[in-house]
Length: 78
Image 1 (cartoon, helix red, strand yellow):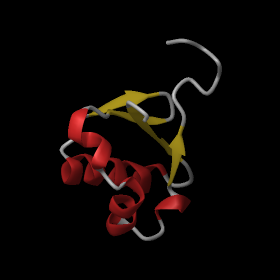
Image 2: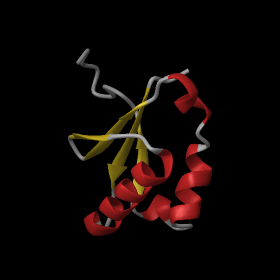
Image 3: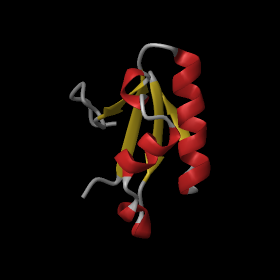
Image 4: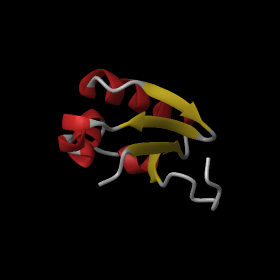
């Protein structure tokens, strides 16, 4: 299971930022800035978070503003 969740901004940056903040507040996860978005470290019971459900509850149109990212999708190690 993934140890990190990355949310990337797409479209309107203000809407994406609003979603990033709301996601952190609702899940209790700390957001760390990454290029183009934020990263949330998933540990222990954090793996049980229903990510898509939380995002949809925050904003049903979240896919217009936020994309799910992959750690190191550019092929780097860190």
